[in-house]
Image (cartoon, rainbow, N blue to C red; front, side):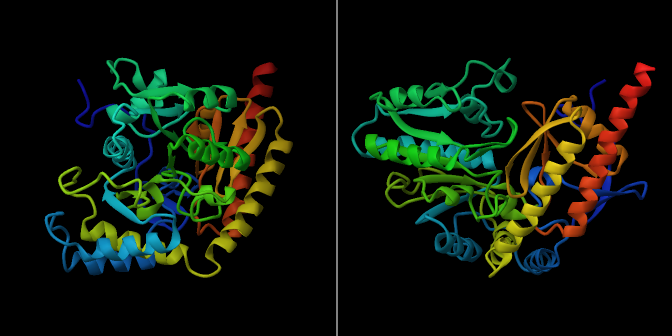
Length: 398
């Protein structure tokens, strides 16, 4: 008999009832150190007092009115994002995949308005993940996302990750209108796009008049040590998808754009019933306040450096379990020699939460507020997990 909850996830046998900072409390009372953060969602940890106060205050006044009316909380949040990013305008939605759907619509409408409606093709990359809607699995193209769901939506060309010659050739096609890429690929195993390559992408888009669409759903909101990962390369996109950390646990996403890129999005071209509701925007506005406080990201970088250092030491201490570390900030990947799920399950035994990814990677995604002591504790737990796996091998060999 099928479960009342659609069995589309292989869920761990853990049920959490309370969150406190970097910790989750299981129903049986065990305390787990959380280096998963709801898959990079809990940017400020669990039950951050400022977010709790904002949510309570807004909930006592107004939850929802719809986008038929002006929502003051949208204006406040948008003003903060405009101040701190490249964007001139934005649309609020409920998830990253919704932001991705609008990114495609906006790019195509841009070329329609410019009198070149044939420029509908968007270049995307092997290993990408942009969400689970039909449009976004079509954009990613990977068989593990698309198998059984055909026919896929047309209009996407998938290029090998890091193949510059293929990219230059594809960008010159007359039907291409945009390039979509994650500055750090998350689901495929924490694969950063080098700064020089992001700069080259921006130059290539400018050369051919293409729109550059960045997906910062997972790598944005301070996770790499800057508000958005593309800032390390000193570039700006035309369109950007964000979600996850912007709500600090409340489901909200947004599509940010320049005025030029958004030229075709006039009344009636897009909408959302729940998107940008007062609750979500109020919480996200507080998240922005905290992350953009003076010194906050500098401290994130300092503590992220400690995590990287300790993670490198962990890999060196367990060469039969781990191969290397990659990523940036609080978005690190442990490339494993053992099956990554074995490492994750061994970490469960140490009351430690991490996230699997492609390329046999274990993701470390702690909250931006994780302390130095908790970083050290987390690496110690992973050390014990790795030792347990090595001991199992020794026992099996005897």
